[in-house]
Image 1 (cartoon, one colour):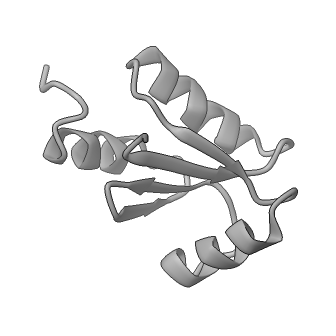
Image 2: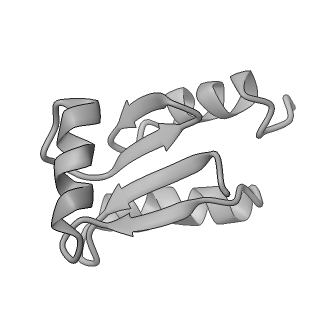
Length: 84
């Protein structure tokens, strides 16, 4: 099971950018479409306090939005991304 979850919608451009970034770095992730899964949407709001997407859960650390530096920092901290 992936240590990274991306809560997203199919029409969100920042969600697509987040997933492209993870794929480029070969980071496995679970893509959770909150349009289709109401329970997941509720879980996302409970974890993040946000209704907007993307919400990225990196081994329990929540990043709201495509904040590249915070995503990289959380991935490195959890051994998922090698330091350059």
